[in-house]
Length: 356
Image (cartoon, rainbow, N blue to C red; front, side, top):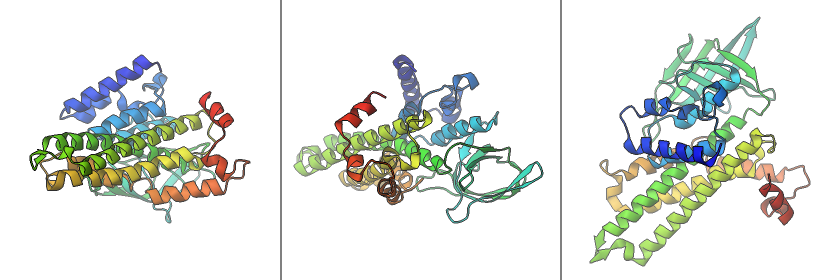
């Protein structure tokens, strides 16, 4: 995709989110943003994962109450599974200790188990998830299938997170895939990081504007050194979150092309959720400290971003979860790359990575 097309997508998404139409999700669907990762030959836009994450950053910057990340991934998975005609697909995961059970009787598959905190589970048309085990299977279920029941829920930001119970449900597709089942978790974590990075940038903008406007002791509070230092820290957190997300999204593209062997052993992917999650905590704390009580009021928009940051940092793996993954992937590396070379690559390895 050329830079002109990329810029056009950015301008289109920014314009739609800034306008904030009542039927926001329908407008986004009408321009194909939900199918951004589906090839153009199949009715999608055909962008890279890096560009998809840039679009999610714009959504996060506007606190858009839409299932954009899940729909993007969902349409990508349904394309792999060969399922067509989905209006709103989403993705799901089963509890760690209670994976869904996939059974087969003749030519018929059946799925039993639970899917927890499914984003927009009540309003989706299809849900895609992975079976556990070495031979990963991609499973697609229609929400209105017999045997599907849903218990409504939500996260701190009020976004739907619904529990779904499956009782002998006949799936629309069961397809073997050539990647690890937890690759879906890694992809989802990076996409969530992209949303957080956008929300952090907006929190920074709001904080700077308020610090320059709010007068205390005869001058704007932004003139006080302590406030300036806090805002400087917030700015570095926003930059770090953006950089970590970009690296993680590029790692997904490398994985798709076969350059990256495993997403769960990718330093960039794990670091994206770790670093962005840390930045989210710092950003929420600093922005609310500068705003004081007004930032928590329903009338002010700051809480729309900080509540999402608090919610999103725990979804698809917290910093602690991904820190364990990162440490294990480095310390259990069976290749010739040592711990030091992973953390501090040589000049030759950097040059090779830059020319890919």
